[in-house]
Amino acid sequence: QEVLTPETVGPALLEDVRDVEVIDVHTHLLPPSHGKLMLWGIDELLTYHYLVSEYFMVAPAEITHELFFAKTKLEQSDLVWQGLFVERSPISEACQGVITTLQRLGLERQVADRDLRGIRAWFAQQSLDEHVENIFRLAKVRYAVMTNIPYVEEEAQHWQPEAKPVTSRLRKALRIDNFLKGDWASICEALKKEGLDETMDGAKEYLRKWAGIYKPEYMMASTPHDWRYPEPAAAASMKPLVKAYAGFGASELLEEAVVPVCEELSLPIALKLGAWRGMSPDLDPCCGGDGVASADVASLQALCAKFPKVKFLVTVLSRANQHELTVVCQKTRNLHLYGCWWYCNNPSIIEELTKMRTEMLGTAYTAQHSDCRVLEQLLYKWDHSRQIIGEALVPYYQRLLRKGWRLTREELRRDLQLLLGGSYEAFMAR
Ligand code: REL
Ligand code: ZN
Image 1 (cartoon, rainbow, N blue to C red):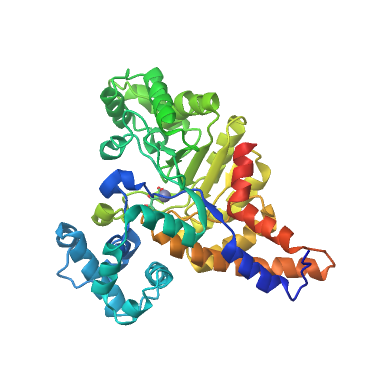
Image 2: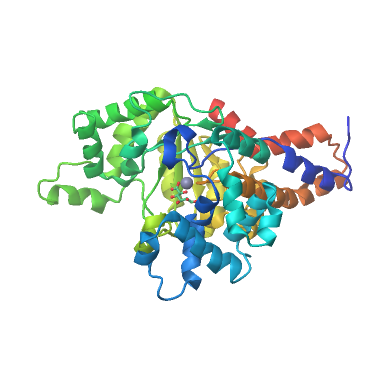
């Protein structure tokens, strides 16, 4: 039994946080059986929307958005490499991510020589199924949860008529943004395609059907930036005034379709609050057009209070919402906080959030998720986060041990496991 001291706990923690097997509770990864929808390799890494957005800040004026997006993936990736890695040093988080990833794959020589061709050649040699397993093993990710969108035709076809087995490294999530958005027209389109009634019962049947196909971990939605629950009375009372209005609003769809089906199937609802969709439409072709807005955390609190039998998972995009959200999480038994999302997934903010959350929640939250879109990003997103989360936690343990608390190495590992997947599983199982 190794008992830790204020002097030994730091190095032990930094070592263990690198070793612990994590659960990645939200990604956009897909299995190899999804063909070209499964993103991997250097050209996908370089055209990740975070990098394309950055590239446009330095791109020559003649490279318009139209021109760029009309190019092939290879040409786009050449431009990003040139603009962000050759003409200047790649110091931003997304750029550093590419370098960490390549270093972890043993491509230091090619990186030092700025040898993009050599990097491409390495990726071309990989056999995909082995490569997937290799990345999960190197990243020490036990499993990752995908984002499975039933109303995106080219995705849905891969599950029809039923789900094919995929690697045990990937679990499913039923994505339902159009329900939380109250986008009845797009829901109707989906219902029509499935031969279901364009009614609330049809909508429920649709959710049941896809939950049956995916057997998901949870249903998930990212809410519109101005999402309110309950919907303001003004919005609801407008409906009869809109001529021939025959649809349902966001709150109705939530209360009468999503929640009842989740209760029936014991499925949690994972929410992502605060993305301002399409803020910069020029960047939408690469998924990079979204901004951030401060969300209404009180709406989340109201929703959790109204449906105590449903479990909710939540993350918010705005740094400004984080403190308020942490308090709500501490008071709400059916709510679990996960990860530092997107614009908050930067070292300085991860550090700050980990400290604040630890101070208020102890180990009862999930410190990170990767949100990876490209397979190999698992390497950098987890490497970076492990390091920062580890460093953020050290002072708390040192302080505790200075007070005479006896801590074994095993107990330390237990805590890290809780923060990086264990608390999520415990919440889900409760
Ligand atoms: O799941 C989401 O809604 C977001 O994470 C995505 O929309 C976003 O594009 C993602 O790539 C951010 O990291
Ligand atoms: Zn996401």
